Image (tube, rainbow, N blue to C red):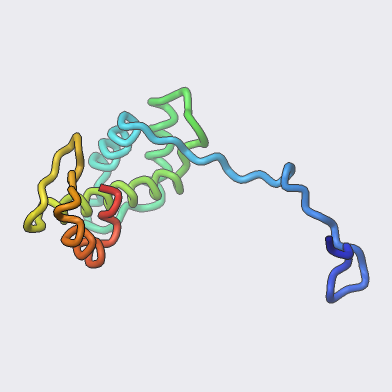
Length: 135
């Protein structure tokens, strides 16, 4: 147990109480909410072909709040919508990489269905394709 004093000062150090320290509750996403986010973004693709602007993410959060009045988990904020979109894109690209790789099959029900027979091939694939290991 420590002395209760800082090493740099001569005054006491207040112990932090983990019960009072709170993190934001994580937003919980469902297939319906993912679909609603994607549909909203599809309707708001920037005409100049650039990335979505901050206002689009705020609009997406408002759209989800309006469409799903009962929220599971934390609020769907501009930041959580943008993070979810990034994860969805990453998952999409991982599945496309798997589908395009020689020797692998893809099923929406079973994912890759890799058996022990192809374990070394799968391991080598993962070294090159980060993020595919979830499938």
